[in-house]
Length: 424
Image (cartoon, one colour):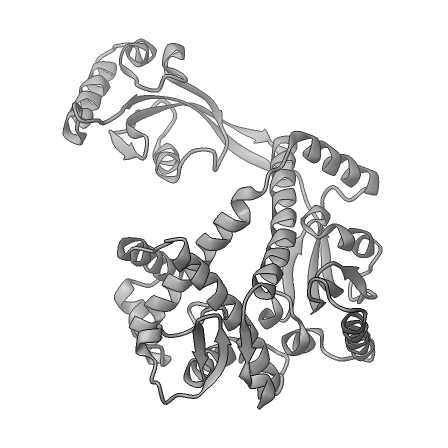
């Protein structure tokens, strides 16, 4: 079994590990991608895809797809190095531990499974390090620059209501035939003809996933073009009208965007139910640590305050006197009604352990040391708040995906790339 789906974006081994006698399949600015690196990545991708119901495309087609993604990865890793972005060993270790936990394995068990499947653990670690680096580069260059205004949320929800699709979700497949920035009329026409040929094959019964793996330039190509479940607002704007008019199983016509020609398939659709959550009304006392108050002193103070409350002292009064949380100390430490996911994970974990009226033992978060008391719980229809939050996330995701595609295209256009595989 594969316990982790590694993306096909990592560029491969570090330059110092390369043999100079190896053949080079691509030059990317001052970096190179070797035949061995490509072959290793190709094997990993084949392992990921072997359990899919659709057959794999020919090796030459899959090889091109994998190399294209390795080139993009190399460009992003070069940018990370230029900007001094690093991933320390502690961060890397914690990430791998979380991956093991997600697969319900200890770290040693996880390593044993990887090695049994033929993956060198040291190579796996460096692959994950590069994945994190690429994520951080994209975060800095794209994600952090995306802003969503309240007006955009209002407009989005109004448009959804007008279409009658506020709760509808769509499972989509996607194929992109890309067009470079400032492409000539001849290149645009060639891309259009290629896209029309793909569309003809699909409408003649070709398997969508297999075709996406073979021909798509989209980021999800090696996942069969699977975009997963999306609401209309999570889609690029140009997709909204076609999707809203499609039936399950339909394949769209060509959709033109600045990045190229798109084809989408509506795999399935569903409606969303009301969002009911368990809210917790709680209050807390926070003691921050500094050069004068260390961890031991903060814990001791909170244990003392907790004992005083157990002996009859008023929690709210002690919060007003001692809590360092200036946002709610004057209100007796009252946090109001808390929705799932609003607090940091450690705080929420402590809340979930407590019965009504119970006070926690002292615990630490990134804000300092706390004791927290659960006052009451209730089931609450949080649909309106949830929908607005989802709308914000949806708009952000749509903007991010559109900007990421444009940014990657610009990054590639500005680079020196010699794809020797294409000439072989």
